[in-house]
Image (cartoon, rainbow, N blue to C red; front, side, top):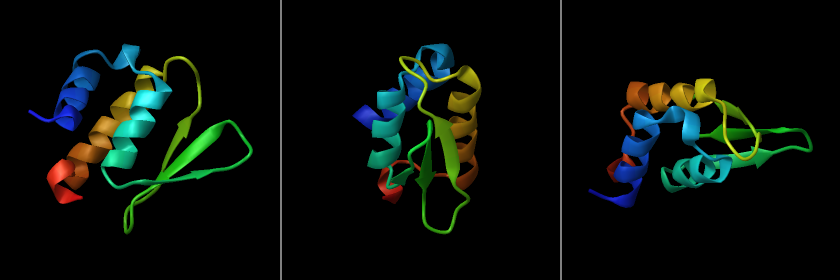
Length: 83
């Protein structure tokens, strides 16, 4: 099991305890590009897919956004082999 797969499993197991930096790192490893504005949100873009907007709430991301990211990754069938 790779680090990416372990991180996804941990996020699924406890979505309330995910740090923004961990989520950002995972999405960047999966091929997303980050577009940061001057506001409090980051927009993650994957070519040909709708953007994901995540608030930069620290230290932990709200459970709703973690579940949104996990659902999005499941829907598009993206894992580290698809990079």
